[in-house]
Length: 182
Image (tube, rainbow, N blue to C red; front, side, top):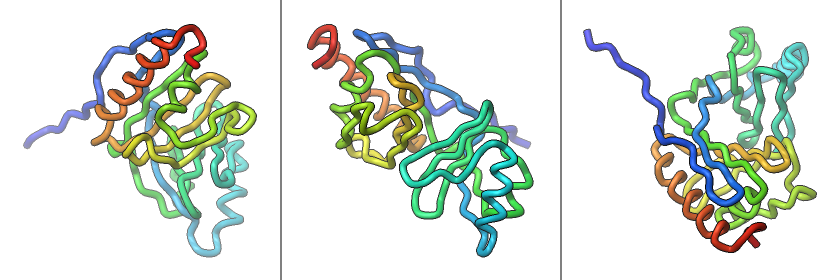
């Protein structure tokens, strides 16, 4: 019997360029879910017991160990330890092995991402806790602002190396422009 060994989507050390750091992160289990018909209120009530909710479009909500991220019309991602009771109220599909996550942080992180995303990433427009399902160059992705100068990028596992390359290249260009990267 062959035993499979799980491997991360990308094994590279963190890089520091200018005022930014790019790193891979393992955020633990990731599952997509959508409410079962007639269970929307019960699902929200259950999530409230976990100090969570199904956030509105372009938002995420977290407690100390789990997050719920908007992923599309009536679809969310549950990140972190998955409670089995969730399956009473929602259709759940494990996505853990299908996605890669990168973290970009630092003073010029918004300027780096502005070169890659067709979004207004100023904090007053795209604030902490906001999320966008948007193309990272030519790749499908989710972009989540977790802190004023920290973002988590979710890309398909098969695109992890390309996403890393694109972000690193943008970091090089922003760092070459000077201290603020503008």
